[in-house]
Length: 218
Image 1 (cartoon, rainbow, N blue to C red):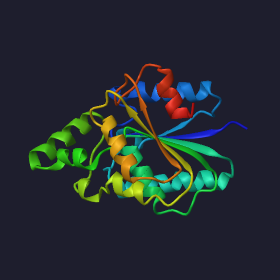
Image 2 (cartoon, rainbow, N blue to C red):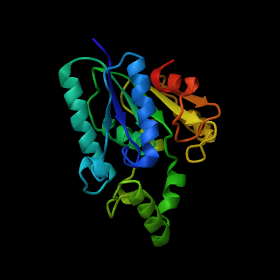
Image 3 (cartoon, one colour):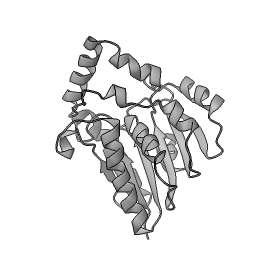
Image 4 (cartoon, rainbow, N blue to C red):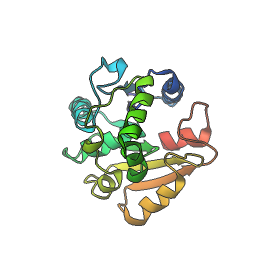
């Protein structure tokens, strides 16, 4: 039986032009490595999910349904989460019972809370990021930022024992490699590891062996 893979998109709609290359690469590589066709999750609030507004609470409820369905099917599965999708993953799993069939999780481009918060410091900056994401097919809720929980807190208190790899691109200014060292200094669970992939950034659209090995356990 082929392995199942759930792909959690970032804040931009996975069907938006800026995002399509990222997820096309992941799906193609997953198929090449013997997975079933992966399911790429679009969050409520993204155009390809039918609209609405996006926030952590709504997305976590949405992901919980996906995980309960996979658990009920009784076969193992992996999860790859990108950027804001990593926040959804951590927040959701922190509120669920230990998954029995989740094998590996990879979190790519995880957000630093202080850097993330800079988008919402003023009315002007908040409006600016909302407009950027609206162009990327996403509508944020009016209380999007106040519902966020720092990834640093969620990681340190992560309650389960499944394997988690946190990947960073060497050239990623949004989630820089220095954040890996910071996390590693105080998040010491044995099941959480870190990998910095050289010469790639936040959005990777061209096949890079070290990057795809990071996502798929090589």
